[in-house]
Amino acid sequence: MATTLNPLVWIAPIVLLVLFWPISQQIKHDRLKPVAAYLLFTSVFALVGGVAFMLALWAGATLLPQGTMAGPLAAGVTVLVAVLPALGAAVWIVRKPQKRRMPR
Image (cartoon, rainbow, N blue to C red; front, side, top):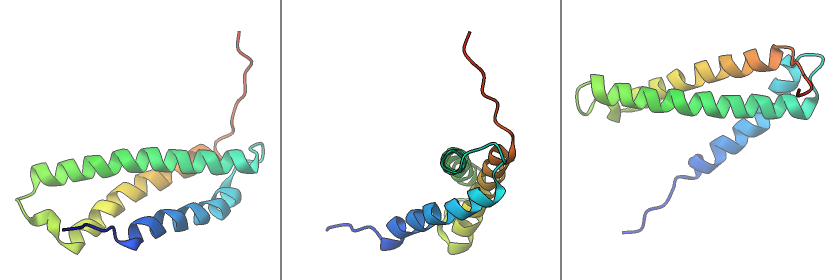
């Protein structure tokens, strides 16, 4: 039996990457260049979101009874638990003034 991926698996990240540009430009610090703000925002969001998603899946599989994580409500809560800290960390890092120091 051949398995195929849902097109949403490919479309959702592309839409997020497109939406991250205006968000990062609106909230960036004045000293931060536009491309740097976008790259910081996307990389921090991906890193924190991935770690939070894996922790949410692990916690749900460990603490909840078997079969509880199979419904759409559990999927929505898991994604929400991953996206909120990722968005908070990305906004925080882009708003923070970046310091450039010469290496010694």
